[in-house]
Length: 601
Image (cartoon, rainbow, N blue to C red):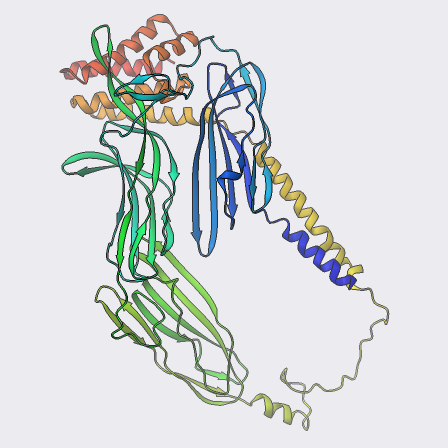
């Protein structure tokens, strides 16, 4: 009894090391001034558990004013029978005082257990004394069509030309036929996407779902009704309808911040500018009419395979000795619902012992279905010599292209077994002593014996026991140390963002140089190069890229006034040139001025 208690203790100690939930705090920066804003995101991920957003409790944010939030994002995946979910809660904060401020601990309850984040210390320095141009998220006034403005973001009922669609490859599939689903976000060519959050997840009742691609890709060029658009592919999924009838995919709803071009009136002049507009978009529900598989031609051994497949049965060796194992592989290869049907079972005649098969899958999810191979590998051991015939096997699948059932049959497997059976060898071994006997024969009395002491130490007093007892605690210390190391790693978001923007500035400058002579493309590339260059060196975001803010940031960096005026003049020339004629010589002059500006810092 005492042994079992120790063994159970070791098992539970090792099991306790398997972390199921990860809850942490991410901040956009660790040092800022009172004029700047801080983005805080609380992320919780769980394997095999459901996360309820109602169980989340944020900290008090003492010393900060909450400007925006929480905005939530949620991810859910089901891959190879393993479920995982991830939820994020994002806040935008304005520091109210200087010094070392702390983002307190957030809490959440997952599966009945409470989890807490670690506090994060933020250093706040004194700013210039001017508050950020972004006001409190409350309604501050009416603007452009009586739209309430939240922060520096204008909330709209809709943004002209921006919409979200869900495209499916088939609207009338058969049961278990693959259907590809793509979510696309369309915006006009001169618009930009600043940020988006998923406010409502789609639901796929009646479908077996696989993720093909969860990463955003784009932008891509496209046309709808002859009008050019930019679109992003948000995600791709593979759906397998599980029953006939009308199945509905409930919509995906996003809250999107779109950068929209507008005109400002400065000193009687219409000057092009941008503003951030926030809108909710929905993909709309998709109704898929699923057809029942036809009853005509369906046999009893049909197990639900739908697609286009090859079937084969392979054996390693047809001639073996009695007691020697034989490997027989039953394999299906092709494209379709490879994970949703059973393979034919091997039936062997008497005299062959068949063990449970080892099932393996090498399957890749594509937009037209699962592609790859599934197989069962059997181990068969003949007990007696002779000739054995394993009957042929049938595999039946439904081909949606021809709307018919296809039957594929393997050949009979013939095994030739030589040697003596287990019973014959056993009987002979009693009359003819020999040192070469099978494992199933009687063993003869040994002439030499190896004696062991009568008093032996039990397992729980041995070195093996002590080693297994200590191992869980050593592993726990290693895991804890690694977690502390990862937690203390400081991610410099500003530095990474600055590097990326410098790279983009260089890229757009090269594109502008390449498009000399094409006014539209040249000045579009030149303007993007200048803005990304200023973002990188002044450490400001797109929403803060006003001329007044740029001038203020340049003055704070003690840039010469003449140089500042040159930069502002160059930006104005880019704006005006896009709406007025421009010669090649003027483009070359503007390009040289831009190169001089970007090389002067």
